[in-house]
Length: 400
Image (cartoon, rainbow, N blue to C red):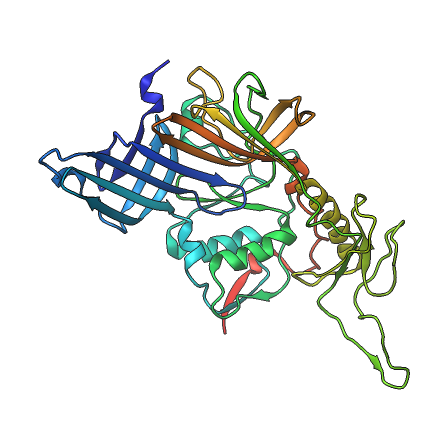
């Protein structure tokens, strides 16, 4: 086992900084940019010129030879007294700019989701990869390990989006996130400065299981019904409400409708379904993010119920080190499937690795893992094919 594989380095302006004493790096399926917070503390060495790290500089963070962050230093902080000094550096992946910065006030039509993402990300120098259509993208680290790209389990059509627009002051991330829900894709950083359009489980399967009594140092299992409902109604955006003043009552909203078999209160107001675990009255109404016909609202309602039940169970585990195995394999990666064996939680099944936090402190190197059911991030069914004439080549963005 090579000691270099556990070495964390920060490269800024051609200079490599190492020997960090405290590290926290987090990646998550639910955040578009990975983050890092690293610090170095020592007694006064008499020479500090070599530790000047300007805020705003481009940087790269590696664990051994594995790239985990490619972005910018957000903040550098110095604290000191008569005996010691501490240098703390925090930052994010390049895709963090998509969260902070506003999208141009433009309308778009005839563009695929990837084309739109590329147009919005280009000014930031961020490349876009769609592994739901193309072959699976490998990181530099995975290429060095000799891994091969694999075709997706099912190809996404990638048809033209309905005509839409970037709202005033809306961030790039918000517009992409809003449309990604209907496209059924996840937005994550590829750790190398690019944006990855992906789906749950596309990072492969971890060869080593998480097992209580073996490699799990601590664990936490939670089952919550806080976001479950007895009925879920999904409505299209084209809706009208009519009040009968004489009868003193409101009629149902007019929207695309479809009745799901077994629903407790199906009607003209939309699609109604619910979570099987909820027996008391708990209704939820959702307005679709984009135009939707009857078929689409039915799909969205069924997906919403299934997705919420999947997210009701979460599992957290702490393991020693930053690698699943003892060999020179890959580090823990989000969006991977891993077998969890825990007799206390009565679990023996495959879970999705939704978040990974790499930690280093006085207790050594550890990983905090957050897992959920693979169904928690399953995509919506495919959108209907675009009407004739709405081709990808005709895509354009127009200023308001």
